[in-house]
Length: 106
Image (tube, rainbow, N blue to C red; front, side, top):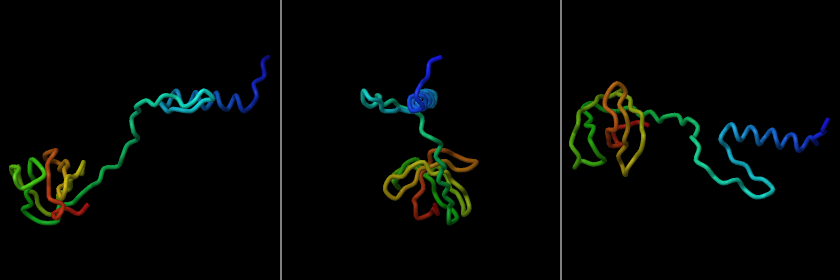
């Protein structure tokens, strides 16, 4: 029977977990090369339209075409911002639309 010191066994177990989970770890030889892994799920930011007849557009500005209108209470999952504009997906509606942040409560 071969005896492995506890510290070595713990290190081996940790390395196995990282190998299965996609993490990286440093060793005596130096840090392991970085590799891209999927990020944990991020909770979406939900915005609510705060007025009636609010235009949603195809881009972040009044120079972009109006694609439709929404009313107070409409929800949107925000995906990004540019200046004073928020881009997101309307619940039960279009995706990738832009609404000015003055008309949203996020």
